[in-house]
Image (tube, rainbow, N blue to C red; front, side, top):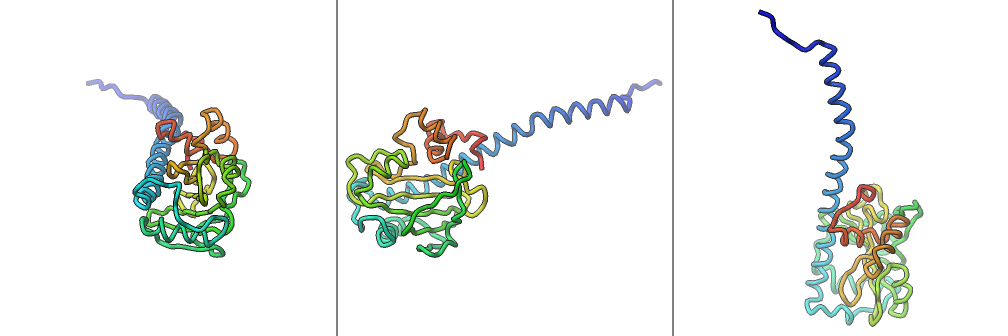
Length: 229
């Protein structure tokens, strides 16, 4: 009885085709998976810190918080220990001069170094997040607004700027990828760029990365593969 079988050449050709198809599709599938994972992690991180602020200010009056007017460590300590720390689990807390809670080698998308500020307080959470809190004087509202794209009109009192790194000390330590900035205004804790137009957000996100979190929120929490860490 005659039996039909594939020749070695046919088998090799088939395997070659399968390999080519896999090489073409796997990077896309892996990229989509990483984008999805990043989206979930970023939403969780923002939820953790936002919920902590909601618990700290249950009446929603973020415009009249009672702590030392900003610009120094005393103000940052006052805000953190009176409002945030009682509402969030911390693994470690560091004050200015102790960099073990926050990797200071962080960059924007142009690979220029960025600083969280002076007079800061940093902390880590059990989830692996790193946060850096900087406070500004109430009279510096216009500077903060221009720098971070948040409308602070009508805001009174010290201004809180919060930097967050979703994967802690791990790379890439880059704005718009794993490092994001938020500002506390009368509406609550808002991501940088919140008050800007879509076109302004898109341009800034491509350039330095401050507005990328707002871009993601407006894009239905989708993280572009260019912004995946």
